[in-house]
Image (tube, rainbow, N blue to C red):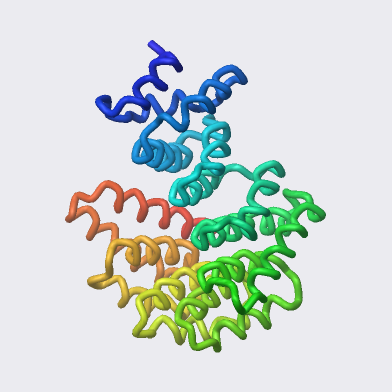
Length: 305
């Protein structure tokens, strides 16, 4: 039996009932009366439970493509709590509508929280990318490009915002992007260097291959992580031996990124490394890791077609 919307709201406001996936799924595809009821109730839901709802939405959106949580996420974009506004941006990752982009534009420039501004301009990057792919209005996306350029070029802006602005504009084919990446890569700030390496991958420009290969040996974990990602984005077969060494004793996040990157590279050597990782995952009986390696092997197999 379907859960009643009124019961979900009542349960969320109270703190006795654990929040379930079924409850959160009921917040999808809301009609106008339900949206108005949610607006009235939102402020009465405890902050921690609002945050949990947004985390669940992020997870559900990855596997259930029939869901539409935009009524919840767009409401949460206006929340008084900055951590909830940031979580709402993350939970909106499937939303590629002009309406969302128009909400993100002012958030990227005038929100009081640097972390929210950073998240907002980072999210604008997907609209820039979609326009490059011909799947979004180029005229609309130019607004996102202008904001990203403005924020990156503002030396007084919080470095977290400048990093995400660079990552966003890296999706653009604008000629000045290469210079911005080079500038940040040469900058002494480690965060900007990491963002520059991320941007190298997103640019799909082979000129950065030597820098990415070099930074796989960096002493900075964040630099190494972004180098693994960029090697996958650029399809660098020469990176496979180094990535194979880095997965030994790697933390979970780095291991998962290495698996993805090896799948994107798709060479015979990368598949051999993935096959070893598959055996390792089986020994651990780690179903999540097994699935990720299987997905990467499937991606790698496309190179044979």
